[in-house]
Length: 240
Image 1 (cartoon, rainbow, N blue to C red):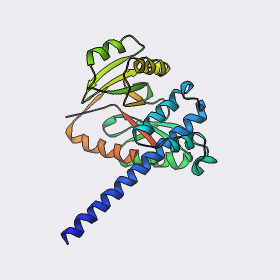
Image 2 (image 1 turned 45 degrees about the horizontal axis):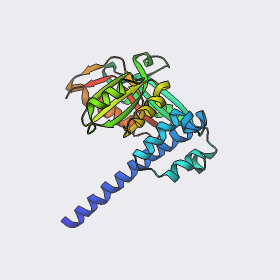
Image 3 (image 1 turned 180 degrees about the vertical axis):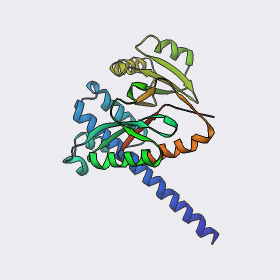
C-alpha cells in the first residue's frame, strides 16, 4: 500500500505540474500572437515580441512552437480576436491591483476577474483608478555570478533607469523605448540576460501585516490561476 501511495502521489504531482506548464505555455503563446499582431513579426522592430520570445525560450518552449505562434498557425487563435486588457481595482486592505489579461472573450474574462475581487473583499474599478500608482518598464535579469563592478560600470553607460541586486540575480530596469538599445549594448559587452519582461512597478508600496498576508496571497493565486490572466501587479509590501 505504501508503494502504491508513493507512486500515486508522484502521478498526481506530475499531473499538476503538466497542467501548470500547459497554462503557462498557453499564456505565453497568446502574448506572442498578440505582440505579432500589434507590432509585426520583425523582432528587431518589435520590443514586445522580443520580450515574449525571451520568456518562451526561458520556459523551454521550442523554436518551432514560437514560430507557429508568430505565423498564426495555431488553430485555437487562428480566427479569434485576442485583446490585451488591463483591469484595475482594490484588493483586501485597500491594496492596489493591476491584472494584465489576454482574452478572446471579454465577457468571460471580466466575469472571472469581478468574481475574484468580490470573493476576496476587493472591488473592481474603472480604468485609471489605480494605474497612476504604477510605472510600466522593462526589466532584464542577469545572473549575479558575473563581475558586478564591471557590469554596473557598463550598464551605467547606457539608457537604464535603475539596477537592483537581489537573491542571485541583477535586475536592470529601462523605459520601454530604450529596451532594445540597452539589451544590445549589454550583449555586445558580453552580458546576456537570463530573462526579459515588461512589468508594472508600484510608485510606492503598502506595508502588509501578517494577518492580511494570507488573504492577499490567496487573492493573487486565484487571479493567476485564470487562463486569461497574463500577470498580476500590486503595491503590497509583504513582511518577511
